[in-house]
Image (cartoon, rainbow, N blue to C red; front, side):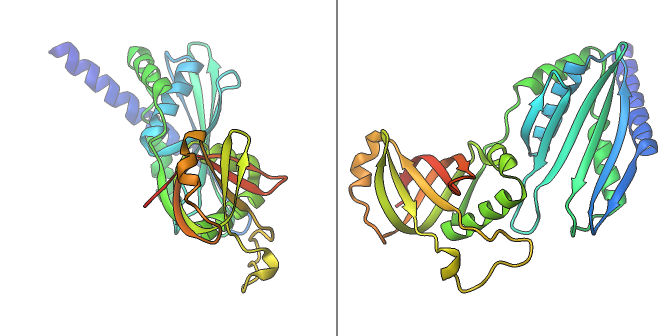
Length: 276
């Protein structure tokens, strides 16, 4: 029992030390007009870089963040807090560097221009995340669990036209990040069918999305000035469902995000089903 108490106290002391170091190393750069970056760093003893990165992966996923990309060899991890109807996606970059038997962990949170955030809130949140990193056997165990963690299932129900505009605005900002962000997410979209056609072995049911010249409102400054088409791919065994669909029919379809083609300006969902 005494050993367990000592271990618990030691762990608490380590976390308190990490939090204090994080707060001391915390820095802010940029402004609300150009975008703001918040950074800090800690060093964790008895921890390898791979275990550190896997630990942070698990920590971020537990915080409901999506892994956008990870590079174990380069020691970097990019995660993102999901956008909501009222907030933009917030990326967080983690990098790890070996220092003997220790690992330095750097974290940077990026806030887009025009978005206001309280510095003390960001500092508290960032340091709470870094304080969860552990060394020793506990760190190795957490790393094993983190390497197996998967992004929580994501689903959303949206109007097809609204979703098309959201994808267009994201593509304008960064089309590569768009695919990484949405791949595998489930969406339920409602709208009118534009056309139905065979696409290889699948069947392509495309939503009716107005051309830019036919829209009542022009895009606001900063918004995309191009149209993004939306298509739902049905598998061959869904032919019976596809044959019941008609152009101009209003439908609700569910599928998982497959990919966005920035050249064709089209986003595809796959394994689609009709919601009745």
